[in-house]
Image (cartoon, rainbow, N blue to C red; front, side, top):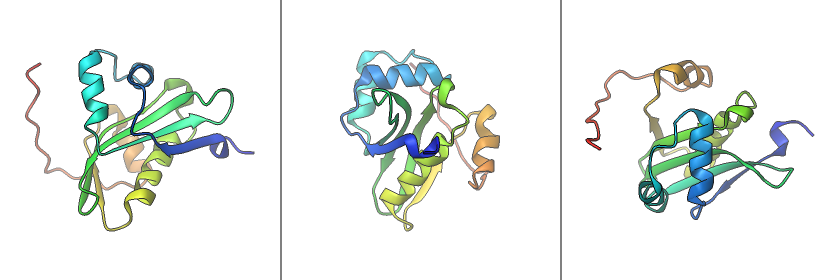
Length: 138
């Protein structure tokens, strides 16, 4: 069995916020969101996909959280993979699972951190320059 076949990709609309927080921290996103915000982020997402190691214990190693209308576009809010599982194709697997569940008629968009641009280009996403950002105030 290959490394990739030992990864389970599933929709988890009721993902435990503590598990989500752990993966965010382990991926480099940090864990400064706070419990209330993490709960809201998960409960108000339209699509939450996870990557879990098949063994041992189905440990969560990746999360893709999205806002979508399931018809035209899907915005990826986070794509986080635990540092210990990076390089196993999990980020690519989560994006492909999103494409599989959404279908080919739904575009997928995301904003990359500067150090992840190469990853997204490397798996075939098209870079666009006309994105805009209004920062959170808190």
